[in-house]
Image 1 (cartoon, one colour):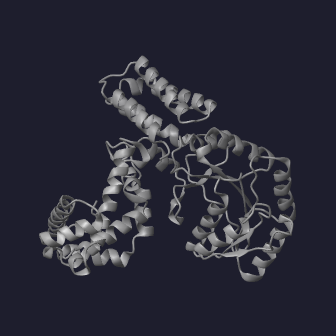
Image 2: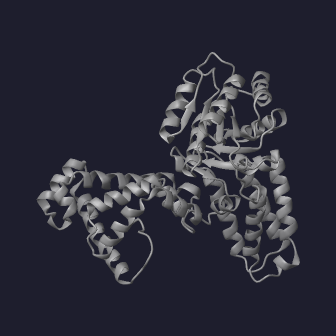
Image 3: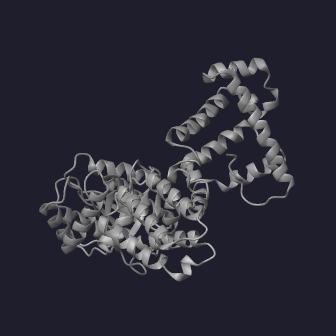
Length: 451
């Protein structure tokens, strides 16, 4: 995941700082040299790194910090605060027009950045908030671009306005706004054409759309995988077309993440959302303080709670909580809990947001595990699913009837050794005992995933 390497390096630097009882000015400067190297390796803009390190140094090399009770922690606190400031300090919402006035949002970006998919996800977010968005297919050049928007719009349950490929994008935008006025759509989102690189034609087309309809917000979609190029693209778009905000996609990929740390400082425009996966819930609102916590390995409990609330069926959660209380939890429920965990991004994603568990390996790994070990843990859960699916319905609902003969059949059906089935059944029994104890302790609250 993005920032894995940066998080690991920063954790090691901070560990070294905390190990010192007192800090000298040289200790701080040496740590800042390491931080500078780590940020540059993460593809953060050189000027941004230089200014960041200078700001931290000015605050850290002072009497209050050097003579404090815990100088190492003070330096970490300063780094955290400066990271938040670097990324924009405050969360920025896309500004909508007041009352029933129509807000026109124009989405822009290069080909391959995930603009069309992100556009549909954004519409889906507004639909969840009770709005009635209209998606508009203004990309008349790329083969199947209109079809892609229609498919994605259907997934989100959002109407898509299209006039085909034989009209100018500006005219399509104008007709879409007229359609929205007649049909009560208060948000119109224009999916404009991307190019392989920034050129005069693209900028002219965006400007023509702006001259034809009132565009209230121009949102640029950039691909985190392209590193510094993404920041250069953002700067050029802002200089030539004018943008109001940025959405950074593919931040869940194997990327260094420098774009997310550089774009606000370079363009002066806020990051609005970040794409962390394929699902609608994986388009996350950008919170600079939460992102700083994740980068520093401090977790992100608030985002985890929000993901849980969005993905977990509350009625099912209540039913499962009752089963746990009565010690009636079975393998069917176990499958349901695995499904809920997958909906929240999988084991690695959940662990990455837990304080103390995401820091030893970054934003997508479990504590102390490298990429291969994390992948192996995920495979283990997949094997668990295969074993449960190899059971009969009666066996899933009554784990106590699993005798050696049944276990052999399950192992064969799942393609695993009998020892794996025995281990899973034993772990399941221990988990039930633990859950029973928790239930007796009177613990209140929502059902917690048993992982």
